[in-house]
Length: 182
Image (tube, rainbow, N blue to C red):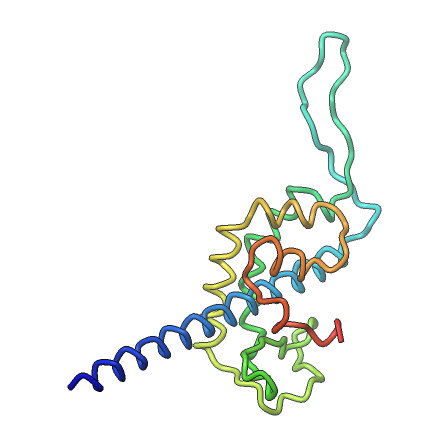
């Protein structure tokens, strides 16, 4: 009977490891998809569009402390985007990387609402995947809202790596190199 206890312990450890890896793949994929969606949305805004920020109270000298900032990266716009961005997770499918056997999440619907030009071979698309990805996205937005606004309020290079790997530790950088980084 002693051997069965070790076997049960080993199986339990393997299941916990598999669940943790699956959870990390999901949260990393959600973070990377979230970054892609936010970057795309920001790029769609006219760079000349501005919003007034600051105090609208009148100072004793009759002036106001109001400045105009680019709307695309304003806190108001970013907050608005964060409220709706996770709904776009329904436009993603799940793909297993053949070399690492890790899950990746890829956009399967074009930005204009049409089917993507991607080869959808090997990509699983169903409501369970999109629902789980959306829930993971919402969890990330809730937990890291301040970091997301901080990162996207100014232009930066390699936001996926900086935010998803280094700042939030949602991705294991060595295992989640995107195709655009290759």
